[in-house]
Structure formats: structure tokens, C-alpha cells
Length: 444
Image (cartoon, rainbow, N blue to C red; front, side, top):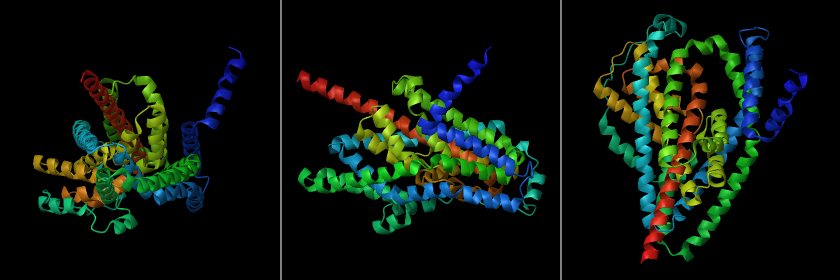
């Protein structure tokens, strides 16, 4: 084989990295992994304090990227949901789409929770770890289970009432995404009932807000590869490859569950959305990889909308309603992760979870995933509530912090894939319904 045959792929790879965001992100993740290992504990070439200082500086692009996204995500979601609602055209179409989307999200989240329970009880990852050694390493020798086997259902009514904001401005200031979503839905529905003359000025303003925020996001996207490099370097330098592999059974359990959920999405795409499988998967590759690198569904939302409308040819009235809503309340990957993490720690602490407790923590995981902010690291915070409800020492979260970032990246990719899958599913429903209405009209 000639030397030229080895050189042939290089120009293509270089062009790919120069032109494709997903290729830049993957390359940056690889470089971050290599650099993190080099300055980490495995090699010992760099002192720990020096390595921490280096990774803090390298993490600046990641922090800037997320700050920019957090800065504009509230007006973007608010404007997108209202414009998505009003683009439906009529209250009848809105009722059909909105109710269908809500039912769809609940069903897919329930499927994700069921898959998580089946996988974690089959593999039993808690049995792969020396419980006593882990307790001693993390200073958990005296950690005892908190006897709270039952969840209080009396808190659910108040939780339902609290999602309707009494002061929308305070919800905007606090970044309470679920309350903002509810407020946007109420405003959007009311605007549909108004004459076009009354609602058009507000819609024009919201359109301008949406375009401005999308432009800011496009600027932030230029930081994505640098952010990916810094975050990966920070993870590997602090934990090292040995520490990252220490919880391998738990990580593998989560990844297997998420992979099965991706298969569920593939079935929906193929048999329900009636889309060609391989071309569709190639089209959604960019949002998936950006989700993997940023761990934020909200950060990927503009790219998801763009991909849905420009590549998947989804109608804007569907994409601008389903994706912003899904980025906030459709967290299949997060719900699955929470249920697997709860079972894993229960196995590690030798806590038996009864049937009633399993049902109640599943409902808690469902509610928590719906209300979870679509930003990195929020899953591990919400998990503490579920652990307390299940009678598991919340201090056990320390065991998961080391590998949470990697799993956060993976489950966010699943969340974004779920949003795009829902888009394709409801786009086909909308097109089919339009054809039926046209057929009825022509026959009449």
C-alpha cells in the first residue's frame, strides 16, 4: 500500500473540522481528554494545585458559553412558545396539538422510567462495588439510611398550584422555567382568541426578540469547541482515568438504559413518523453532538429548531411549539438517570425498595424531570429530593459526582433526540390531518 493512500483522508478530516461544528466539538473533546490525562494524577507531571489552576482557566469558555445561554434563554423560550401557539392558527388546532404533545411526553417519560427500573434491577450495579471501601474512601462510614420509605402525597396538590406564577416577573427573575412555560401558554392561548389586529403588534415584537436571541446564541456557538475542550480537560485532570473507571458498572447501566431509549426513538421515527432512518439520523447529528458537549437542552434549542425546520422540513408551527416545550418538560434521559441512580445507591447501602416506594419515587422522578431546568448539573441536585424520599442517605450523591458530568452529557443527548423525535411525530400528524381536511373540503 502506497504512502499516498495513508495521506488521502487527512485533507477531508481537516475540511470537516473546519466546516462542521460537531466535528470541531468531537476533536475538542478528544484533545481535552488527552490533555487532562497528561496533567492529571496518572502521569504526575503537573502538581495538583497547578493542574487545578490550569483547568480553571481552560473552563472560562465553558462558563462564558453557559452564561450567555442563561442570559437569553428566558426571553427565547417565552417568545418561541407564544409564537408557536399563535402559529397554530385556531383554538381547535391548538387543542389537538397541545393535548397530544402533553400525552406524548408523559408516555415517553414513563417508558424511560420503566426501562431504567428493568435495566438497573437486572444488572444490579451496586453489587460490583465494594461498599465498605467506598464508604471509607468518601468518609461515609457512619452514613446510615434515613427511614423515609414513603412519599407524602399531600404535597402534590400544592406543587401543582405553585407552577402557576402569582408574580410572572419574579418567575422571570428567578429563572423558574416551568412557571414561565405556564405563563407563556396562558398568554399564547389568550392571544389566539383576540382579533389579529390586537395581537399583531405583540407578535411582531416577540418575533424580533426571538431573532435577537437566536443571533446571540449563534455568537455563543463559536465558543462550543473551546468549552468542550476545557470541560473534558477539567474532568480527566481531577479524576484521572482510574477514578473514572471506578464506577464503571453504574455508568454502563445508565448508558445501556439510555441506548435502549434511543432505540425507542428510532422505532418512533421509522414506524410512526414514517421517516427514512439513516438520512434522518444524519440530519439530527449536529444537535445531538452539541447536546453531548454542552449538557444543556436549552443551549441546543436554537440549533434543534433550525435543524427541524431546515433539514427535517418540520412545519414552524410544530417545531416552535414542541421543541421549546420539550427542552423544558421532556426530560426522558434525566428521568431514567434519576431512577437508576436511586436504585444504584439503594443497592450500595443495602436498602430494600418496596413496590409502593418504587411507584412513588417513579412519580417523583417524572415530576422532577418535567420541572428540571435544562442546564448542566441540575439532575444531580434534583436527585437529592428523590433519595430522601426513598430513605437513602443524600450524602451518597458524593459517590456520583465524579462521573455525573459524563452521564449528564449522554442523557442530555437523549433528551434532545426525544424533542426532535416528538417534532417529527407531530409534524406527520399535522400534515396527515391537513390532507384529510383538504380531502373533505374537496369532496364537499
